[in-house]
Image (cartoon, helix red, strand yellow):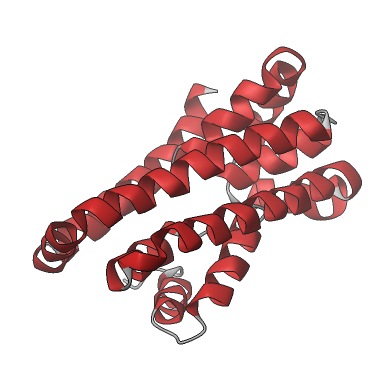
Amino acid sequence: MKSPLRPLYDWTMAKAGDRRALPWLAGISFIESSFFPIPPDIMVIPMVLADRARAWLIAGVCTAASVLGGFLGYAIGYFLFEAIGQPIIELYGLQAAFARFQGAYADYGAIIVFGFGLTPLPYKVITIASGVAALNPLVFGLASLTSRGLRFFLEAALLYWLGPPVRTFIEKRLEIVTLAVFVLGLAGFVAVKYLF
């Protein structure tokens, strides 16, 4: 059976090869931080492998757009949670986990934002939760910038220095790599739902 996310995935992958890939990357990075289910990494990886000289620019655009998109998620949580935020949380089936997160924000908000921004855990849940919990916007912004920057610049650096072998590995084992990325994303959602 074909996954309902397959058309969205195919559309995102097509944008990575587009001549306007950098603006597409910025747009996808922005919306992924608040509601889009496909992470920008699926564009960062082929873009850096195709033009390693632009690795730092790609990582910078992805970081900046992701942090700005995180503020959209924050605004959804702060201003529009019942109208927009709650349905997004329900779409991902994360209501119980979301309620537990709200309780931890008073003491651990910056650490939670940093952790979710750095890992494959669904960052959009945390951006919305940060708005609902009214986490200090400066704390939210700094934690987001640090974690998202670290994630995307580290990814770009690894691809910059190891580009040709990584590209060969991906091309020879595309099914395994795709499965591994899917499993990491799924594990992030499971971790949010059952561990927090």
